[in-house]
Length: 150
Image (tube, rainbow, N blue to C red):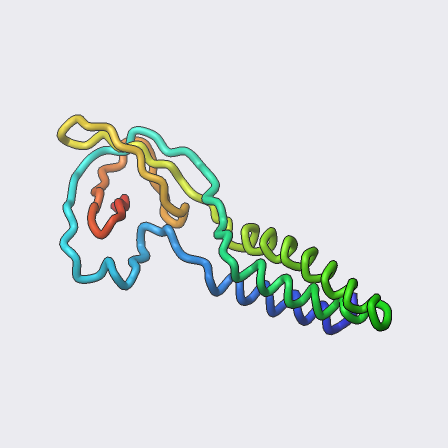
């Protein structure tokens, strides 16, 4: 891999990481602020580790295709460089998409909560806070999201 390709890969990874959104119990979107939330209390019944799949937007594909196209165009001369650019762009697009999904994938937890009302709910969020069976927790619902907190 030459320096130009390596630099392109670094830039691609940074772009993709910057597009990642959060599913943390502590992070709110701009739209969720200043919105009324319903609070429900309950007890954690179980906690299970899960994976939250990464994003698969056009950003990774387009950035990868651009890097691959530039790299591929340096192969051969004339028509060979055009073919190299096309093949490089396709391969780069596939690689960029896979890199984006891998970079934005996160560890999560599935928290099953028995509400005081007796209803059982399961919520998945990022694994950035520890929960244990028997913990007293609150569920916040609003703005299209439900989160568990202590």
